Figure (cartoon, one colour):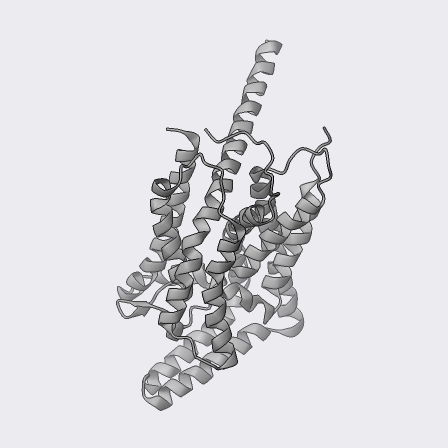
Length: 170
Length: 179
């Protein structure tokens, strides 16, 4: 298996675990298990977790709010299909303005809510978050794969030099 | 070819920004949107680092973004915890009290509407009081430091990688292609 593929699978596992935790928190709480509270406190520093602004599962709110859930969910879904859309070894990145285009719906939703023109609902929060989450893998994956590959090869090179020096000494 | 600029200074600056954004009550609410403050801190690290490059230096690589993000996140986690403790000692649980007043108002409104039974509101208030007391305990502070030491570097790395993608040169440097 090639290095980028290994890195991709490891990252996919991490993101899938992160998203699974978001879904597990309400399920564990609904079954009265203490691990649910731990998962809620795990996600607490990164999300307000307000009940009225969250999606629910088994009668309990998810680990993070609706906007965050949709960002992470769409990120995971696009990450799953990423190798079908772009080669893992390809270092090409989309044009910068696509990122700003993807953020605009979220900014409009927040601005309309703050100015009181139109209150944002769970649906608008979830839908606008999807765009941002879906575009992110295309900006993050090429430098992530390249960066870890570079670090990995440097590590191997250092290890090789270490053993070469050791062999010279003996 | 001259060496790349030192990462430590940039990581300390951006880590301090992450810590300040996450530790100051009120400002820290920015992290309620998928750790946005930490993402921005990672992006700031990449921006500051890129500014230090001069012509003829080794090119900026994505592994630099990984390392910078990691360092900034770790510094940010420590700075935010220290700042939170200092604020807790000097001013008391300001943010917790602010959040409590918000939650209590929302709960009372829901109770008036009849969406939530009155006894449940009392139960929520007790839980809130308990969590505020827990957050001021040493175990609560250490628990928070443990979580932020894992979460902040992850989001800071993602921010730095996004910064690498956004602030990259239009003509990319020759790097070793991933195998």
